[in-house]
Length: 286
Image (cartoon, rainbow, N blue to C red; front, side, top):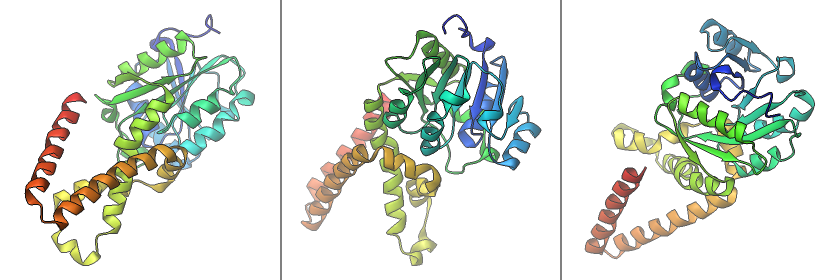
């Protein structure tokens, strides 16, 4: 397989399956950086817009209709990624690097282990996006400066690793090499839990309070607008790590509630200052 795969991204033919926000934005970021750029999307309007705005060179409705490529990127929700991985051994007959950009990695990497020998898998996850999905919201800039996790399998070849790293660098993102379990534990805390916290805060806010809603509430709850079509599979495939993260927040909230209930304002002040200091450390390290 190594003799047939290109080492250079500029010589690579890439197929992106799913031209929603992430897939179309990735295509825009890759324009002019690879040999050919193709797309697959089941939505007719999405395919029309992709061609109208020259997001890709060609687009098809189904993976089975496409031509041979060097790299296939699965940019659909996690559940669809898992279903596609179960079909690729039959669909793809030539050596191909398979990369996904799903939000969880353990289940996906386990499914990738079942790919045929001529398929070369590597997991990926860019830490960027918007609450509004769809090709209409796509822009190359969302990848600029963003951390991009790459999660190789034991079987992943040096060629696939090199090609994935070239791609991440080309779109302006920052490579972070991780194993699947570490990735899922980390994103449970910094991505999946914030979505649930934003949802809980939104649901606990009575409608009669809306006249006083300002930027603080809006920024704290914006993730609640993320469509469940993307998030339910994420929550299902990363359930245990998310539950651990929820428990840590529960402990902190219980402590703050206890201090407030006791009117222990000096201790409360110390705890809140500790949170502000910890936030600065988190942001500086990131």
